[in-house]
Length: 491
RNA sequence: GCCCCCAUCGUCUAGUGGCCUAGGACGCAGCCCUCUCAAGGCUAAAACGAGGAUUCGAAUUCCUCUGGGGGCACCA
Image (cartoon, rainbow, N blue to C red; front, top):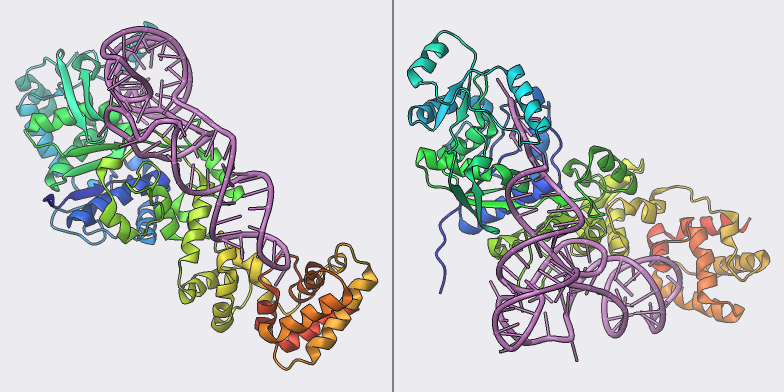
């Protein structure tokens, strides 16, 4: 029997404070999958209430990254929607209104404590090995008096009035129920002195106002998860389905990737930032495939997926709560798989920019001819430069020592070149079928191995010891150039 | 220090009390194919953190420990 699923409204809500990384991309991907699968909406919301941490250009980078992956949103800051605005910095009055509602309901209160006093208080608590928490000084000030002080312009924040005793149980979709003692939850600040709501309040309000049905976010929110549920309950709102995804660990599995380590990774051709992936030669299809499988699996052990496959097959039921170490060699594998899955025209289109960025001037027709012979040889798209750059260089400049085959003398190797040249000069067009047979005959006649003979020719024609198949390469290079390069190698 | 989460091959994972002699994938090793490099095919090595408890029976349930991760801001 078919399960009837309500359309999900899910949001990806990054703060524009840095680069979009793999963890964020996975969260966005799961959001997208849920929305598309249920015929719901995928919403992009920018959480930029903290002006101090705002990074110019970060919002654009987030949008570029999502679009590169193919995760187009339905509502967002750049395209609007019925529940806007989609930047928290444009929603201040909404938060103020709801904060007041919470205060009047008795679930929040004005606090006039000075930051320096709170700091001292915290230090004392830590010295006494107590968990740092607000001491409740302003908790019992009457609303009438608090209002008077606010009216008088006294600096203040708004705090949540957390119950002192009892427990709170919240439910995470993949982890199940989590129960905490209320006394371990602080009277968190909801609204800062400058009047701006903090994440804890703003996100809950936005999720409610925007009709969000599923909140998918990182496990760093687990400690404040009960607070968030309490806020929803204090308003009398229905809670969304909560899903707290585990963090990605560095490849060693020991801890999160640091800024320094992320930079070091680039030296090995890897990155945790989405902005780098294209330039490193990765296909968005491969990145999607790869990050999907870090924390999620499919019933029948299939591992190769496209985005449309995932829209159909993704399920919250198969999520894994354990933190996952990032495995870049598996990304390389998926990249190869997806490269091999590309149509030749598409592969050519995607390889071309890498050749251009390497200073070459590739023409479409040649790039298309190269596609089939490099397809299963590329781990990343930028490998095409190393593998097939010689097709676009006027000179190949082989290293003299490499023109001498292993096990042969320089004289024998030169003989190979001369005899081959003579043979090829007698062939009008260098197609594999016309070239291979006579050259194999030469191999037999000289009594050398095919590897020795073809190895010499490979170096002479391509300038490299590793290349696409020799005869196919010769055909694309063209008779005139092949002959000229052989002559050049004989000297 | 306190709170929360997590725990199967090196890594990503399957596994919801008997289908487990613990399955798959990446990587690694060997073999085959082969003009190099790949791709492809085959084979191998490789794991239930420890201790208790429940049960006829535990990777699977419970407890303790250990280990790992996250959080403890007028950041998100």
